[in-house]
Image (cartoon, rainbow, N blue to C red; front, top):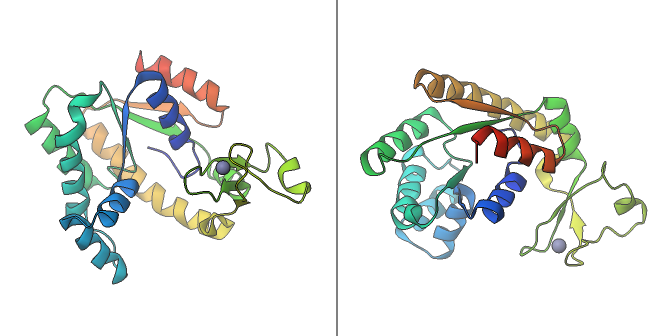
Length: 217
Ligand SMILES: [Zn+2]
């Protein structure tokens, strides 16, 4: 759990490579279902086209299906972008205790101030090559843009900004995020789950070191 730009995706990738864990991203799952025109995919497609938000039940059934097919393939699963609401957290918890009672849930909270998030996201460049999507920071590498040609060092793709990385848009996303974050923290605390805090303002390699330490792997 953490605000946009906290480095959840980067840390996930390290865990996948290092521990062989699997990652479930509801955003990617939605796109996959839509592309494959599954029953869930068609429903999601309709909802998006009508400008509505995808409801908790649909997201939850998608996650359950994924768990049925994949949960026994790895020693760990990273949930990225789920559960986002208390309703999702309750449904997910109920499914786990019914079907996978031995699975242990651990909540890791990425700690980062809003100002750092704004600073990071507003200086973020993303490779426009869909197969690459490497992320670059203007603050970390000012030569990227001063040279006039912002090109990906991995695939030579063009680097660009995301539409939703303007300061106003980022502050708005943070406001929504914090509302859900506090509710989820309250939910997991009342549940007796341990919430581990991670200082996400550090360099990625340090964050990974801290993470490995707190989860005791
Ligand atoms: Zn690239």
